[in-house]
Image (cartoon, rainbow, N blue to C red; front, side, top):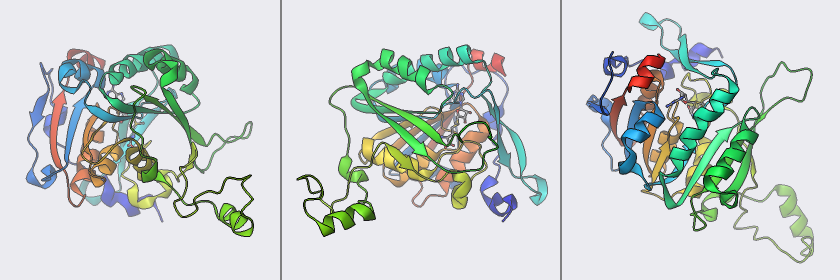
Length: 330
Ligand SMILES: C[S@@+](CC[C@H](N)C(=O)[O-])C[C@H]1O[C@@H](n2cnc3c(N)ncnc32)[C@H](O)[C@@H]1O
């Protein structure tokens, strides 16, 4: 099946307010047509903005309010990423620039460190931060997060494994991402029961044959187990129903486990590098409120469309904030 089969997901909104020229003194709310606004009771706030500039502008309002932050920033890969939007008059989807990840590694690390430090202050006392990276920068960012949170606030390094084609012939195929998890305090929230999975068939078989198989420890086979810190979920390229034409879009199953483990219904979940809005979609489906930020108008449009397709759709409000620095970077 060719790419065209999924183009119903690549609809383009072209909301002119998102790309209007000029600089904003403060975040400006953009009225949404009723078909995109949803009606709650769950809410999703969407901001088209540079996340650091927005956090500085919204500093007091969000401090200490987020139970969970999932950040999926550029990885320091040196590449430029694309999105696909609908072609004119029903033609094939066309690629447009989505975001650049080519600022140079040292500049990248400093850029990300400033955002991670600002993110910490947004968390509730029992809140958690998940930072999604890969081999390019994870070791450097681990050291930075130890500095920001304290080494004793490190909770997990989740290894997300997947399959996929790769041209590499001179090393093993690089097919995992790294998700670093830190908690704001020792009294963090973690709902192990919400994410239990069945034991492997081989474990069930072993204990069925001998109750002594576990050196005196018998697992509760009925209840299932808390997942290990390595997870397998297929990449979005293989989950055709989820594809919305945004490079680096993450699978909903991955976010579901994170949101269920580290937040409760009605909590506030944030994503400061929201891309196509996966975190907001999963949060709404699981009854959590969300704040999504992305500087790319195409990402904002895709997020809006995905949220509007949910049933029930959350009550969505949208703002743009183009600060002086972001305008001169364009
Ligand atoms: C890896 S993608 C996120 C993908 C997302 N998790 C998804 O499932 O679609 C990173 C996103 O960060 C955004 N971004 C990069 N720099 C940003 C900044 N300074 N402020 C806000 N968003 C930014 C990019 O536009 C891009 O959409």
